[in-house]
Image (cartoon, rainbow, N blue to C red):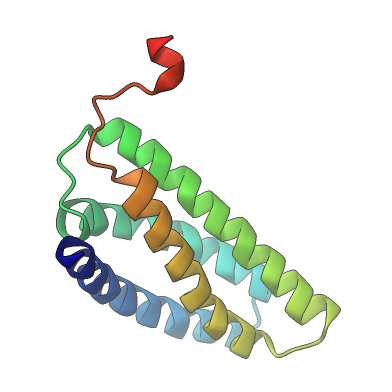
Length: 136
């Protein structure tokens, strides 16, 4: 439990800084006239690239293989992206809520989803285990 709390605090620090900068950029770019889903998509890719290093080495202190962790990280963030895109479509395009508010809420929801995926799957402690299919 203590290890998870430390991971959550470090993950939160990386996330708060990254998302604060990302959200301010989101507001500036959409304020300049770029469509909200395109802006979120571009900033999402930038966020994935910058946070992998910090989350792997500092937040989760992962010492396993780099390649499998990066692949799982990209899959996790792809799931987070699709969740965020779906929510923007539903809440903004269909239901008419302001995109600024929806995206602010999504920052927290996607962050929670990604913490769980990273804790339980992406940066799991035993990268040497090939899994059940490889052992069969």
